[in-house]
Image 1 (cartoon, rainbow, N blue to C red):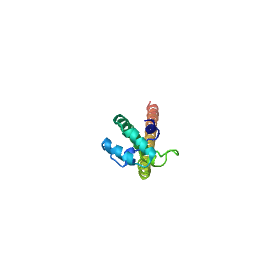
Image 2 (image 1 turned 90 degrees about the vertical axis):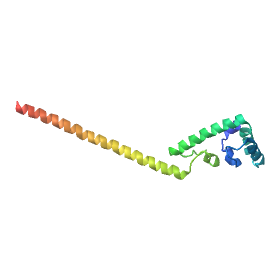
Image 3 (image 1 turned 60 degrees about the vertical axis):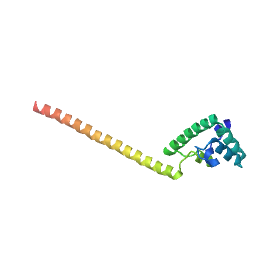
Image 4 (image 1 turned 180 degrees about the vertical axis):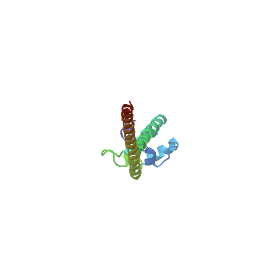
Length: 142
């Protein structure tokens, strides 16, 4: 199980089977695999039902984290490259588009915030001018 945690990959995709495939189909696909490390990982993680459940839960969590990271416009760190990184990511084009969308939304919110403060400034200035005018008018009338 430590191998799976150390080098988390989409074993189903790498074996060419669906996530819903029965255990015997997965074991056959793993045994046909020429990559000895992948074969050992798949048999260890997917060959036993309790290990498979743990793998599926962890893989779903990592997939959710990858989608969240991509949705926030975060990119891969230099040490997280290649196919293993892509198992849990969305396409880079979507990341750029999402980043641009978030930047536009942030600019709009900032503009609205600044406009609101300018309006408040004019309102405060008008109230102060009105109070001064009322005070001067009151002194003039008396």
